[in-house]
Image (cartoon, rainbow, N blue to C red):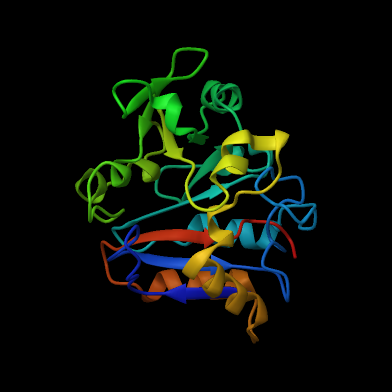
Length: 236
């Protein structure tokens, strides 16, 4: 199931187009069952090939699109190209982010508040790759549409740094702990969970692949599209 929003009003994504993706009756249905942030132990076991192909092409005219995935990057990294949707590998650890970076895959990682040190904004992976804190965490009222002057950091395919997101919300301890303490998905709380649950319960007459292609085509030129505020690329 795919929920589309042409203009987000959420603080983090204000002004951007966004989507939510869920399984039928199960909000975690498109997420890997093995994801460290998934407390249910239930989810997808494989990537949805048809949806992945559509997602990669679902970019607004003269705009950019990006998303994140907890599936092993080996399953989709070979499809990344300039001009396509940028899929960021969501790493459980900075060591895992290093592996993605070494393979030429853009990576993000969840950070504990303490990991930023005295600067509060920069860190490094074990291999010495810079970790840049999400700018929205450092400036009030800052959204993805403000990031990079229309070229958000997460939408940059060939970047030479990892992006860090500080664990937050009710599950922040579990999120920072990674696989050692399953759970902590930020989307599993608050308004995001409400939208995600509604997506899982909604009916749909077309496939997610058809829906995401159509949505991207309808957006105005130059739009910024963030796929999957909640959800992933798995086969429900």
